[in-house]
Length: 192
Image 1: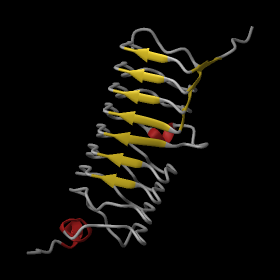
Image 2: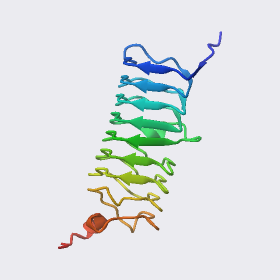
Image 3: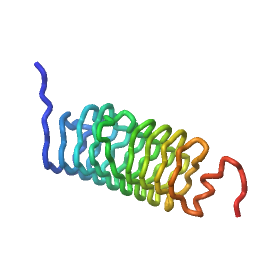
């Protein structure tokens, strides 16, 4: 007997620990998750559309074929997430005041993604497409950019990035004068 997955509309989940009682597989549309725990949870094959996660912990969650379509994360912990394992079809996320340290967007098409006031320490953006994304006041210490499409990306208010223009596509990307050192640090030169 095949188990049918349910579609959940316009629901609000508050203060639930899904690491203990797993979120049922299915489709979640226009739902909100507030102060919920998903750490180390298996979210494989779950579809989220037009949902918001606020003050949630999703650290180390399994995201195999998870769909994120027009999703907003606010003040969430997303440590060690492998976003490249998500379903790429209509993948669209926005991050505000989140910690994404040690996560990976390897080879992911994530155009027009908003990262505002986020910790992105040692995040892997290798071979990803971040065209027209915005990094507003983000810490990019140790983040990896290799063969990454950064065209029209705004880095003006972010800091601690190291981006080699010779191995990344940076056409029309925006940087501040203070952040220019992050484009030249591979040359081991001193700028005063």
